[in-house]
Image 1 (cartoon, rainbow, N blue to C red):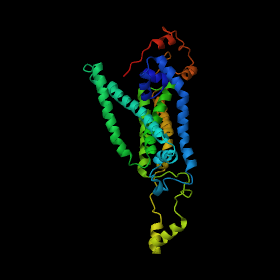
Image 2 (tube, helix red, strand yellow):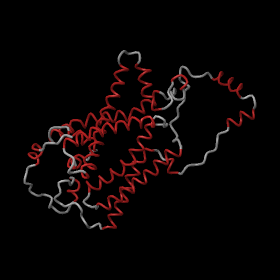
Image 3 (cartoon, helix red, strand yellow):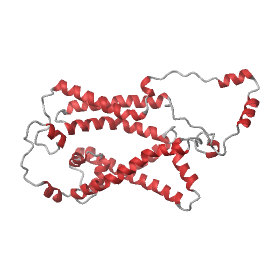
Image 4 (cartoon, rainbow, N blue to C red):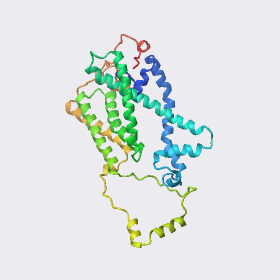
Length: 344
């Protein structure tokens, strides 16, 4: 598993998918062929927000929620599918089925990774003599069911938040930036002991956790792009709105008191930051803290040996020594063909 992480630099979920292949050669081949379609789909998903803004710039479904029923911006994608594709038979069901199938694939890999990590990294070292391979498989299946139930209950809590995308990206950014910084230090350099890397990782996670929680708790809304509901076919007429306002505001003092905005205390300036900047902030803070710790503990000391197989081509290019060109006992291609990946 660690070897796969060193080869690909991927997440635990991707490692679980790689372990389902018959050999390391097949896993590499599948990864190479899937880069182009996966990258294309991710690029299209990133452009989805711009496309919806161009469509709903003069008819915001959230502002016209009395007619659309859309309460959150997370509901715009299902609303668009139902409102635009509803006239074509079967297309709405096909889109919804695609969304559920994509979610099912991601959730199944995540649950499998959680159960496998719990069994291998936590339970097996403690109960090494008591756990057989068969028992570990059964425990992993029970843990997958347990984690699935927790996710179902957690979904009810998440449904109460304002933006599911903001909360999801905030939680991921808290760990993604620091972990990526540690990965870059480990792959691109030979420096960094266990203590210095752990110090940098904890420092970055603490910084991003503090700012991320502050962004969510402060209630500050980042200024969005201009949107209105003037172009909606069911928008309220301006004359009717004025008449209703005059009837409701018979007393000028009462109307003025209601129309005055409430003065709120200004939040901390870091809490005004968009959650998109959390990952770069965690990356920079972890990188700086790790390098400071490396300088304090000793920059001249190389932790990773020169003949390590985990060295990246960039690190080998930076190395002044030529000791990494060691004759290996086995050929790499022959070794990859003979390696059989265990299936969890």
